Length: 121
Image (cartoon, rainbow, N blue to C red; front, side, top):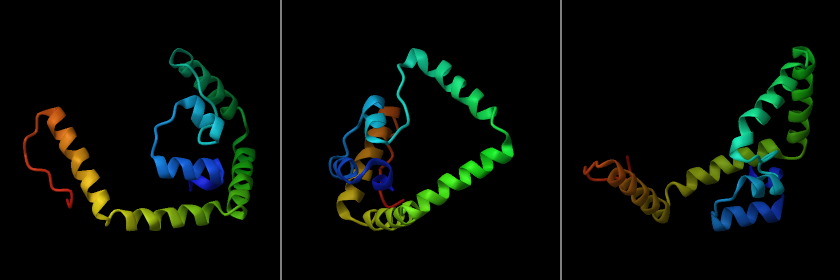
């Protein structure tokens, strides 16, 4: 579902590189609404939460439905469904299985667990 949120070019880059992005970059590409320095985050989130809480619930519900309907019209729901299908297919690829096994091994080493890693579980 990256494409409806980020646009084709940003979504393709994110999917092909797998690069981590900063909050600023995520906001710039449409993956996030905003980015804040850590020391400002809590206050900023609370300010937004107070504004959201001030919207009457019936109006909030209608507004949310309107936005979700537009997302559907733009293909968002289909993108989510196809993304799930492709993720399910990817999970069966040897390269993905190897990457998962490597990740699990790294985590186990970090926590001192020396039991064998089996990516199929």
